[in-house]
Length: 140
Image (tube, rainbow, N blue to C red):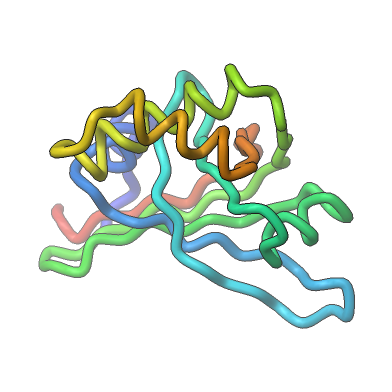
């Protein structure tokens, strides 16, 4: 496997509809990993949390987060990143992330309606400031 450049791993994250697998630590120390729909927004990765989720509670307690996005097809590739998550209940932040997720994962649905449903259902926007990246590609 070869190491991806900064440009390559950012393109990899933005391509298609791969899911990100988010890893957090529960209050009792047990790990918690779950898939999420996400967007790349500038230098950050962003996603939305449903109210009352384990992810919400974990991030409220500890903003450290790890994420892995992989390609299940050969030549196989992955991007694993670590960072600090910030959450926001601001409707405009939720709409922004929701619109991006809708456009990427739900192209047959009106993006503004999907985003507004995130706001109405009490979702939270999450933005990750990336502090460490390991990105490998099977090409090379």
